[in-house]
View 1: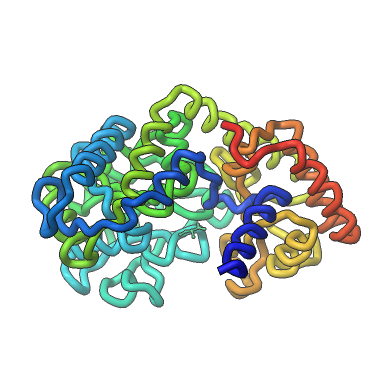
View 2: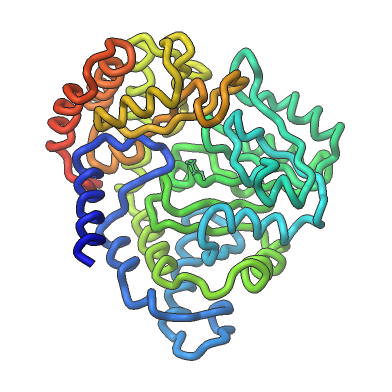
Length: 402
Ligand code: DSN
């Protein structure tokens, strides 16, 4: 056991000593951690509150109801299911609840910023359903709503997915919903990346427009690993049945309690300020990177993430990820729109500010981070030397300051 706890300790130290810039990650509060490590881990509760297949759920019922009510309050949703284990199972539940096998749907192409579950041929979404993919405009690298509308009119999908994993700009959910209505499709937004921004009022909400919304709870929302589905009342029964019993068994009650805590945190005024700072930090980091000679996809960011196109820097996403890792800066290699390289060694890297903002860093530190990235990628400085500066910067910040 010592060996296992030793490795956990080393990971904890790594998270403290390095700059974690992966935009889909976050560091949760001690309260969320406490719920995750609680006795709720020991319980079985198949079913829904007050309709369980196991005894002894009097406290679990209350916790799940609290999580649902808080999520409704944050997002203004009519119905919420907090049981999905994670984002992919949540999206699977939406598909199996609302579409017939083989039905046609539209989603963003994975290599342009979509998600595996939005139609990739290697996921259930591409295997059991008929995916039609849209992308971003080649020139602006942003969504072209007219092109998406034309494709929808031509293809007549039964569902249109919006919400992305590597799109640095705002999403017009109202427009997506209008397009879906025009072709009689269900509008579905996967807001996993931006749920915290929506909760904090710094990104337009998919509500009241979207028919169905899914989100993970561990990204900008800063809760436990997990997900939830929010929808209009008319879809509630089908969604609940798809989560349990179609796709899942017993809910993870410890994660549901941790979701309730994260939602309570998201209702506090400090959370709004945290989300504002995430966006301010992303803008500051993006501007500083561009001033330091990097090209950003779409020329900047409106949200928590950005994509660097390394084509002109004579390096690849894979090489940059490895070099930055050695310098204690964690990013992930990522395709850029219309990438000519392969996903395992693409032309870009993806960066985001949720964690460094959780740690209390502000615009000044973002400029330092941009300089450190330049030191590694453009100046070709020894990453081990740069790491000393990274460790020095991190030493001034705790894991969780907000
Ligand atoms: N893995 C997530 C991300 O990094 O964006 C999406 O599921």
